[in-house]
Image 1 (cartoon, rainbow, N blue to C red):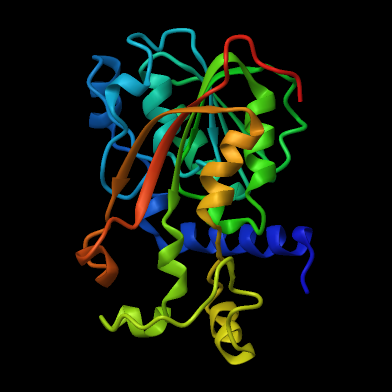
Image 2 (tube, rainbow, N blue to C red; image 1 turned 30 degrees about the horizontal axis):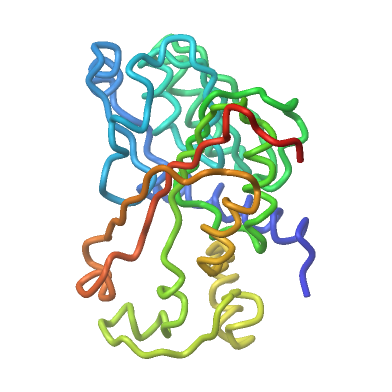
Length: 266
């Protein structure tokens, strides 16, 4: 069994390769999008398609300390910085973080970038941020509850965690068949590329340098936020055109979770 550090190192390499290959999640926002954000016309996503509801953010982001968690790629961070927030982008991939720095230089934005493991935010002090934006990415870590605990710790009382994640039902299917439109149940939850796939299948992923994925239960995704101390105050679902399962049900979801103003100590 691979250690957490080995998984992190492999997934770092995989995402660096994704940047080289031009994955859609590594393409920085345009000059036009930044200009619109400066005018107050902006949107960002947690899930593949549906924008985060405007009411999930304060009316004015000016001076808001905001952490883009596992959110490199030059997409969410630059938009939110152009809208006025004090943005820190935290990600496991140096190449993804470089995308944010590229946009920051191009558009004269102030963006701090930090490399690290989303489940270990020890580089930040308690109560450092007002908002965390965490797009669908915790499928790349074997355990999600530490992510929620760390997010709770670094948020200020009254702060918000905006998080996207995949519906775990996605992982009970045979993915190779699903790619061909055939929906066949194969796996149990929680899912792991490291233990749920055959050695041959996993080797194909590794030869193609695809990141390891993990399907977390809703008890860990939603219950884990509640157990960390959050109060969930918003929820929506989303799809992804072209995926067979998305023809029948939403396969992504997002939550707005708040750290109570009188937050308990952890």
